[in-house]
Amino acid sequence: MKTHFSRFLFLLVLLTTFTALAAPKPKLKKTALAGGITVGVPEGFTPLPDEGIAAKFPAPRKPLAVFTDRAGRVDLSVAQKETPFGSGDYGLLLKIYKASIQNMYTKVTFLTEDIRTINKRDFIVLEFTSEVADTRRNSNLAPIRKYQLVQYAIEGKTLTVFTFNAPTEEQARWQPVAQAVMSSISMK
Image (cartoon, rainbow, N blue to C red; front, side, top):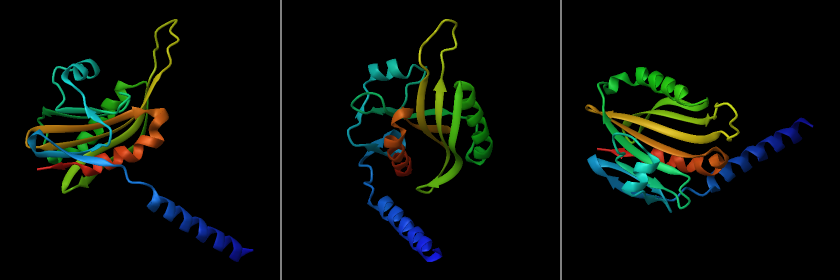
């Protein structure tokens, strides 16, 4: 009985390993942005025009670039702003950004909160699902649920923020793509 279980376990591990290796890698197109930033943009994503950026990302400072899928439901954005912090502050900034995200949404579940080195550059990495519920009285609007992977990097006095977001119900499809995109980032 014990050897059958051991064989079964071995075959299960072997099958899982081959399945993971056989899974198709997301197709990304290496795209150069301003400031020596290169990012892999998922196949089928297109740049959002200025009018689309203004409507979808209303902010005083326009993102450096926004790419969206054909349906306009999944986005990759890159934004920059000045920061008084330096690369030695990543530990503190991880806590600040996590708290900020928790305050922005009704409910947040963190999947990853880390500082990682990707292509010789340190990044703060926050991966999470979020929910915004309409708490107004007599409102029966469904909550908005998103899967998001956000990476932050500091170069000099500039903070660069990379954000990939998709509807939570499509997380299984887009999470490997988001992770591949974030692993492709290069900053010179």
